[in-house]
Every structure is written in structure tokens, then in C-alpha cells.
Image (cartoon, rainbow, N blue to C red; front, side, top):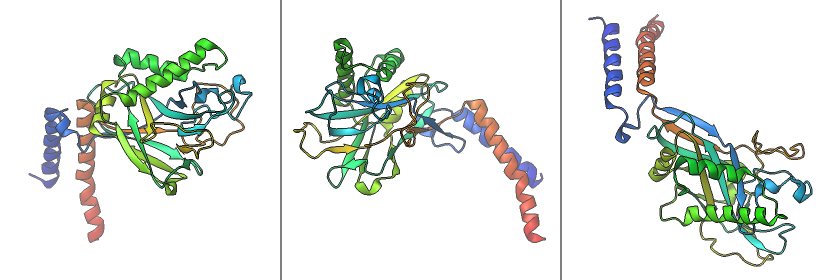
Length: 298
């Protein structure tokens, strides 16, 4: 049997083995797994007095800098009409997992940009991700839709709804499950992307909502109370201003966009796709190697 044919048979057997062993969690680290980057379809923050990032640039705020996707988090002195209070912002990120099936995601991380001057506080801050306890994909889709909307602070019903959404985000991290991921950040990390690796629980959370929208929440650990407005603010991801199409339409010409949040996931391809990819790679290697060796010896 020729060496070429022997290698080809080995590749075919490997592919068949991949098919037969699919898709158990223990076999998630396969050579042919895909790494996919998904840009956020929404990002922002809410606080307990009803302020949220979608107000930035709206007529209610007099056309202020339209950082409508700002995802700063921490204790920050508020602006009018909420002036005089030091509030606790919690941020969130929405991603579309349409096209992925439950159990197909084997790993992941969230990448967030920390701008220059986007850090304020002690020598190190611990940032954690958390998930929602909404009842299944329909509830998650509704939550994502509510977070995207603009709720006027001058309409009592809308203001109450905004406060309720902060409560929903707060309930996420207060629920009795561990964080989806945690990272320690320092001021030296400014002007760079911060990667938060998802825990196995975080990966399970993504799989629970695969096929539709999923919302990740975030907050700074240890900030359980807020102080008077003259206290030094403690925040992370300040001055973030990603531009995300199709959500709000304020004039964005006055801002310098920062990178959009990205969810990176590793996925197991469909069995038929895995076999084709492995065969293609294997056959390519099988027939490339002799030519390379020939060039070396000539």
C-alpha cells in the first residue's frame, strides 16, 4: 500500500471517529471546532434612578453626546435631571445566537474595550458577568427588546419601567448562581481590549439560549452601596461609545467610536460538516507533504 493511500485511509478513519463520538461535552476540544466572533447587537447600562445609556443623544437630554451604547459600570455622579445622586450603574450586552443549537457551544469569552481614562478607582477592580433567570428563550427575547428601548425620565410610566429594568439586571447577579466569568482589571489595562473568559457555567448559560438572543450583565464586585455625589467615582469602561446599527438613530457624527463588544465562542460543527472539513484538511496535508520534501531535497 502506498504512503499516500495509507495517510488518506488514516484521515478517513479519524473523520469517522469524530462522527461516531459526536457531540459529547467531554469531546469538545476537537481539532475541527469552529471559533466564531459575534458582535453585540446592543450594549448599555441602567442605574437605580432610571437613567440608561439610550438617553444619551436623545431630545430628553438636549442632544448630549450620543454614546447610546456606553457600557460604563460603577458608582458615578449623575447628570440632569438626575443630578445630586451618586448612582450604581450595571451594564449589559446582547448577542444573537441564531443558527446555533443548544449544546453546540463548547467555550467562549467576552471582549470589551477599556478606553483611555475609562478606569477610575483603587489599584484593581474586579468585574464579573452574570446571567438572567428569565423563563426560556421567549423571556430572553422580551428582555433584550426592553433593554434596547428608550424610556423617557419625564414620563412616570416610562421612568418606572426603566427602574424596573435596572431591578431585572440587579436580580441577575443577585440570583443564586456563580458568575459567568470574572476578570481583574487595573489602570494599566486602559486603551486595550479586556477579555473575560467564560466559566463552564457561562458556557452552559449560552447553550441554554442558543438559537436566539442572549443577554449578559456585568458589574463591579464589592460596590454594594453608593456614597454622596462628592465621593470619588469608581467605574470601569467609562467613555465607551461603540456604534451598533439598527437600534437607535441619534446623530453619531460628534463621537469617536470605540470597538464594539465581541462574544467569541467555540462551537462544534454539524457532524457532516466536521467530516468534510477534517477530510479536506487531511487530504491537503497528505498530498502537500511529498512536494515539500521534494523541494527540500532538490
